[in-house]
Amino acid sequence: MKKFLKTAKVFLSTYYASNLEYRAELFMWLLSSSLPFIMMGIWMEATIKGQFLLDKLQFSRYFLAVFIVQSMTPVWVIFDFEVEIVEGKLSPKLLQPIDPVWHHVANHISERFAKGFFILGLVLLFFILYPQAFWLPSLGNFLLFLIVVLMAFLLRFLIQYTFAMCGFWTERASAIEQLWLLPYIFLSGTTAPLEVFPELVLKIVLWTPFPYLVHFPASVLLGLPVNIGQGLLLLLVWTAIFFGLNRWLWRLGLKQYSGMGA
Image (cartoon, rainbow, N blue to C red; front, side, top):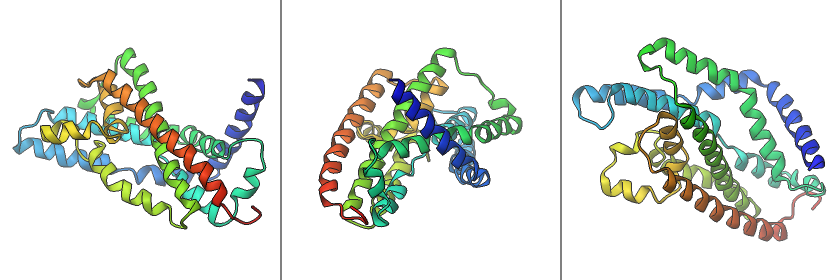
């Protein structure tokens, strides 16, 4: 355990320092995640002429929660891993007595800390512009949210890292992520709360992993009525499925790998 903690400290401090070198880039990436606020304006305008389960105030809070969730769960491992395979950079990492995935995990976690103040600043700016939307989640909801958003990040990371394994057989594994992105945007709750979906569509979507990456954590933070037990169970089930698939593809991929120095 002592060795693990020491290694984790070195990894996190190294990647944290690396992320701080590009603070302006981090801020620009954060600003590029403005889709929830765009959708908030659309849905708030729609409430003027239509009847929905959520009112104007709830829509504003929901999309703020979506922004917070997406700021805490972004994943780009497939792009880094694709470069490592194509350029042979994976080879020296395979010689290290640690799974290469921990480099990516440390990079993602340290990035959260590096841009934490930016996220907080934008949330405060939102409440200044929309003071009527201000609310504080209960302690129980906040603690549950931290657990759920961590599980959502883990699932999203595993999904994209599993897609990245295709890089052992193709030079454009990131194209798979682009295909995945479309249903993710529409079915995860990023563009609309799932409460506005037709009942039949909602029942089907709730069995997919998409709602549990954004909508479920956002709803927990807001205290909206969601099935906590079902959400946690499906998060665990989909995580187990992609973990097993990932390890299987990893073993097959290493036999296929022929990068520089391999």
